View 1 (tube, rainbow, N blue to C red):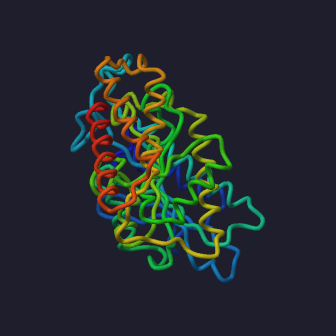
View 2: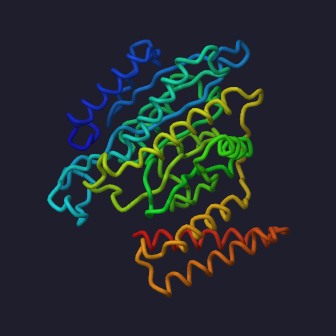
Length: 355
């Protein structure tokens, strides 16, 4: 669809396709006028599935994915980058298969699963497909300012974005960020891991490489005091290039992550208490567990990343330092600050290496 840039013919075609899927699943529109929420830079789509519990059905879990992408190389204001990946040197279309057709597929799979449940979930679900995410989360920002249900009634939000990728060949896990803002959502991720062969690491918001964790449509919700999760597999070499095509999608990881979306929705929508939200979150050891696991995978197969001896030694040093904190967890505020400084420095080094 020519890269699905917002306000483009391809974006409109993608929107029509998603809307037809929502209608085929029998999901109710979020607004009296239909599924669409037009705004200056695009059009959001939202559907609803009402909960079955008379005491909880007026509370909502929002789950969303952006359907827009970058259009074409050289397009007006496009971030679509040329690439030297074999077979794509002359390609001009940023198809956005991983980013973010995979997320759209996972949210539609959630709608399909919940629509078939008898009985359904206790809380209600708001399923959203955001436009203009690539231009600065414009669709989700508009929605939280003009919500189809009261923001005070949204108990949590899950953004599904850039899943089913491998940031290196042996990368077989995925991430759920922003868990430092909610103990309940941290625990929900761990509960889902226990019921699955796919590991989703619960990590902090800064894992995405931005200080405020603002890489996806969860951020505007979090800024309104809503506990959030951002599900992502990380950015591989095809990110924001014409090489992001269907063949790059790890279908096993896509299916596993879609299943996690359903299980997380059930965890959040069916509990008695709404998830907590921490305005001033504290560091936690989940970040170290995730980084040590990734380091172990890289060290087991350094050739796949073309690492030289100095780079491999640095990763081993990082792993040893992180493992030391896992073996003897921080006890004082000063130790927690030292630990978090180490984690952030490792994350910064990873982003420099990945380019």
